[in-house]
Image (cartoon, rainbow, N blue to C red; front, top):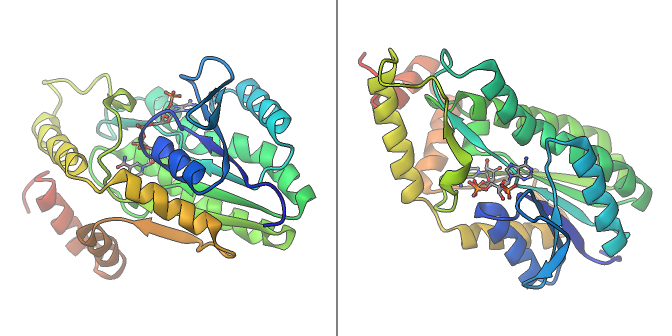
Length: 274
Ligand SMILES: NC(=O)c1ccc[n+]([C@@H]2O[C@H](COP(=O)([O-])OP(=O)(O)OC[C@H]3O[C@@H](n4cnc5c(N)ncnc54)[C@H](OP(=O)(O)O)[C@@H]3O)[C@@H](O)[C@H]2O)c1
């Protein structure tokens, strides 16, 4: 790249966003990190920290204005901001679905709407969106999250088709479980109580989800992989970073008949018989 390697990273206060921001910094990028828990502009650990709430247009605009004061060139945007609400389709409220979509999907849309005109004028730019294995397949009781990540996947395909001619490259990062996520961003839908008709399945499935995350892959390694991909002349459109069994799950989901997949996943999450 001919211009300064400045990257904006959303959701960079914890988890995979923080690990990715650090890996990019170590690879020589100027990192402008955004999150709600950065109360005011600051410089820390070799990164520029700016307040950012991706659910608020005004906050996104302020973030972009301040980022442009630090560096007028935006070589890349990495979208990591995300939340998870666990709950059944039936009991998760519309408001809870809205909150997840607003952060995980519309948050990317808002930031991209600021970054795209800049990148188009530059004649180049890179947009990296954190999807998930759940962007490719559903699992029980992560329905709002799964829906938001499927939205990201479809949006990214259209975005790449529209913007390639302006020199913009798009990459979807599809992580499997990583031991990084903080409990602060994992909420149980409010109405999921002991009287829920799903209570026993929910208990088993969320225990399994928790176990998978606890034994998940190394977040530092993921950060380095994303930084390496961003440093290449041409990024892959999809970068799945997952354990071999999660790669296998995606492969089976794609090629097996739907009822076989259902049987495998129900048995895995012990969500019911037959
Ligand atoms: N961890 C995994 O195993 C895994 C697997 C697949 C995909 N992912 C994806 O990777 C990304 C990071 O997840 P994580 O689990 O590693 O991180 P996490 O620890 O749960 O952190 C989430 C980040 O998002 C930020 N955030 C939440 N709401 C925000 C908002 N409205 N505006 C700005 N920032 C906001 C949080 O910062 P503030 O609260 O300070 O704003 C925090 O930095 C997410 O997109 C997630 O879906 C993670």
